[in-house]
Length: 350
Image 1 (cartoon, rainbow, N blue to C red):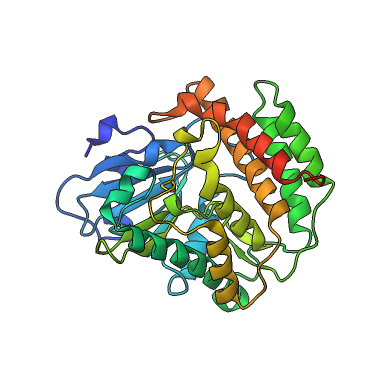
Image 2: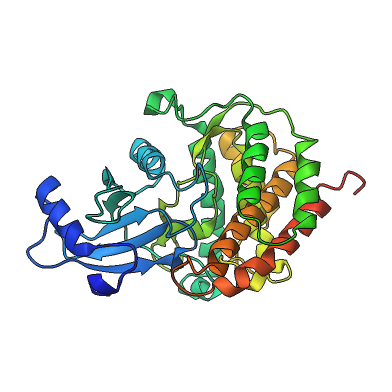
């Protein structure tokens, strides 16, 4: 763990004061200690020790923040609402510290820490058996189906998004995000965006969309032969919309390490580890959702476009010294391969 003075973006002395004032039942007797989790490629996440129970704090990234992105209030709201529906941490509070600077100088939220491991690299697979990882892949599909089956109104999320026209707005949003992060030419990515915008499919039933659903956005716990999803994390892109966006995103991440430069991507899925083929994952989703297996071509290509735009934003911040952590130098190299993959998937002549 790192002392407060050495943790960028978080004043743990201020956090201790806030905790004692607003949540005295959680305040500890000594100083808080904090450590950055996950490298800070998007929102910054810290583990905080020294309170009555381990905590996690989330705040927006340092420096360049894109419009509509990094909304802490929305993320706190959806995690709080989903407690008991899918595995999520218990939330504590959301705070607007903008202008005060007591803790982060931004909006931030606090939740309880959940024990588990993040499968962010194939090396992590060694903790579980191949059969266990196969079952984990199926569980990821079933958990996603459970999320999409939840009724937003019943969870207090009826006004959480506007499902009508969701895919068209997504295309406009991510094009704006790309325009706000331009520091170099991205011809393949621009071509993919044009192709997707011209062929937006009609959506079916709307549901709660995670927005970045993948194995390395989960905490995994349990013995070697039977891992389980202890918590689904990183709900910053959650909204109401077309659920197939999540399934397309999961499909893209299932194969991302096969792309040129994909060895630098987060995620554990490699041949031979035990994970199911993605067609098995799609079948498991469809069985749980009691729906036919969907055509995911547009959604898989959209996932490539969306991640490429996100990574271009990370690359933008990296080139300006506005990132915290390591591993950013290779992020920009994956943008073009993702765009090319999306163009291949969406090629109408294929």
